[in-house]
Length: 360
Image (cartoon, rainbow, N blue to C red; front, side, top):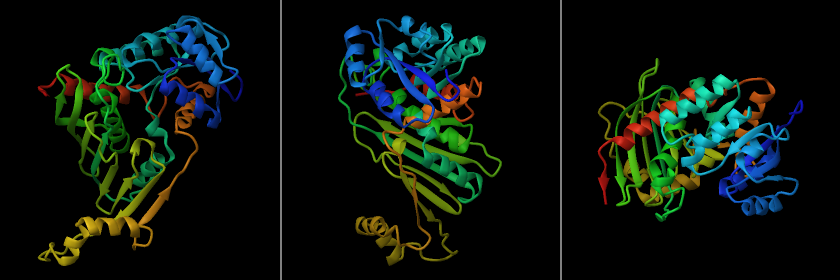
């Protein structure tokens, strides 16, 4: 590791590994050094797409190389624990793709191993590091939204259930609950603080895969409790938006919120006591035509603010730079994505996963 650059090796050669490799060129601290895959030919094909990348025939070989400072684990969920521990045992820093592990017990084991080895370890929950999320976090802290009251997040991408697909196959750690539910839970925890799972439901396929889930969180805050309502699905396409509402203003992140570059802030107006809330103006505002007018006129409506935080690539460069900054400064954990937050999210997912669920 040089004074300003971290050399990354990638475990895996699938879609998210390629996305990481493409985005690292936008990073300030990271350079792509190596790749290893389950099949050597897959790693070789990957390296051809990213010239200069060294190919290793196995994960242990890559982890043991002195040409690599840190490992990005981009293998199927079911292998996250094994591969994170492989890198940690070799003394390499770890950035593990979400979900960090298949359950909270595995996450604790990884975190404890990293702490014992005194090496950096972090979940690659990339959405936490986006500029627009940082802006939203700042607005909450400064009181611009007033008392935070409610967060609503919907995330659904229709994906056919296919045996052997690590995204949907439960035997590989797939399913909407862990694949997508971790996003809403993690962002809610980041923006509103520690939470209590109040309840939820999971709809499963005949194979046992979680296809759709919805759950509610309560955040105990000094300024007053807040509620988060989160829904996820592989069975349909959802709005993929996140809206945070406060007593003074609400902010809506553009879809898909997990990769948002823009958001809209709008003031909150309270109706006077005794006023007819179902006036013509109110009915128009809540009609499909009125909603369309709102979208068109957001830039000119009084009090509405368009928040712009564009970036090149997919956005993984920000988590790369957070990990890089921690490594270059000698830190073994991130203040933005600490192990405790990862574990608390997985504990909630475990409770939902083990709860009574319907099968269709």
